Amino acid sequence: MGLDNATRRTRYLQLGMPAAVIGALAGTLLTAPAEAATAPNAVERQRSTPLRLVPAQVPPANYAVQPGDTISAIASRFGLRTADVLVWNGLSWRSVIYPGQTLILQAPIVAAATSAAAPAAPAATVHAVVAGDTIYAIAQKYGTTVDAVFAANGLTRASVIYPGQTLAVSGAATPVAVAPAAAPVTAVAPAVTATHTVVAGDTLFGIAQKYGTTTPALFALNGLDASSIIYPGQTIGVQGAVAAPAAAPAAAPAAATSTLDAEQAANAALIIRIGRELGVSDRAIAIALATGMVESGLRNLDWGDRDSLGIFQQRPSTGWGAPEQIMDADRSTRVFYGGPSDPNGHMTRGLLDIPGWESMAFTDAAQAVQISAYPDKYGQWEAQAYSWLALHG
Image 1 (cartoon, helix red, strand yellow):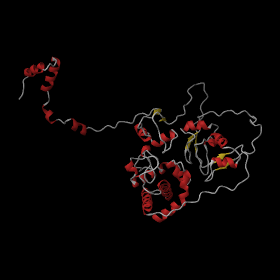
Image 2 (spheres, rainbow, N blue to C red):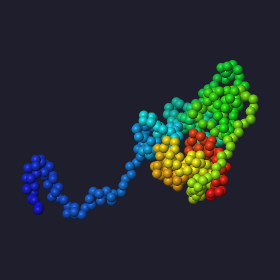
Image 3 (cartoon, rainbow, N blue to C red):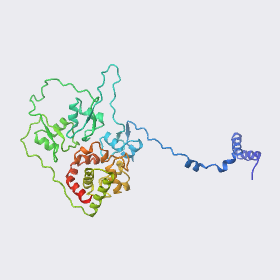
Image 4 (cartoon, one colour):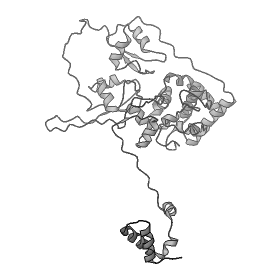
């Protein structure tokens, strides 16, 4: 039953409403358009309005880790690649972050000189890493320092470089002038100036023993530390070391072999099938097979180091996917291969996303994806992986 305007005002006054509010409310009620009954409600308007995606936040230069944070969540929040955040901070896929830790969220930029009186900066120069390169050797070649190369490329002393990688090597630092004819501190000239090419099975301790020097001396000479990883083909400077009597070279680790059971053979066939579907080379498939064998024994494990899961022991906390996605062997294999059809998008970096992976050593290519603490193990399965490819492909 409708009420006239005067009756409405009387009832609102009895409820204690101010007169100004009553007037506005009554006017609103009286002036509702006739088509209001058919106007879309709030839910319908929301459904009919195109959704606007909220852009990722602009990443700060530094970010303090909060309780519950993961590398992948932080990267996603600021629209970054998980792999980039790991590289900028000298971390690996297996690294653990903690509340209060400071992370770098922007790629290092070499600032140009702004003072008119300052000399012009040299033209930007980059160096393409080749097999055997070290940060120390690259710094020496371009007249800069190891620390300057680290700073210009967001690296640390724990970082691993690989063939095909591009490093900035100019504008990072001014070469330090060295006084000519300066006498060594010991006043005795070094006995030899030499380098050592790393072979499978080498350790820095063993190299130091061979050349009659110490591990700290090799660290200082090559810009390394106790957490550094060396790999076959790398050149280590042993300048100033006294060469020990020649010894037989260390034997390379024996090639690993295994006969696959039904479960392993099924996973090998899956890796091969997906590789064929993606159109990758036999070498890429062999690398995937060897990686799966090293990481899980070619089994789709629901456990592993920390939160590692699946055939390739990928970690949910570092952006490889939710646990149920990683346990999907088909999906996790596609994520290992990566490339344009990677179901994980840009969050992780698969084999096809590694620049120059085709020209890298077999074990180095696998290591570039997995960033393992045991990089030499992949190469031990190279010959066997090609046998599995022939047998199950």
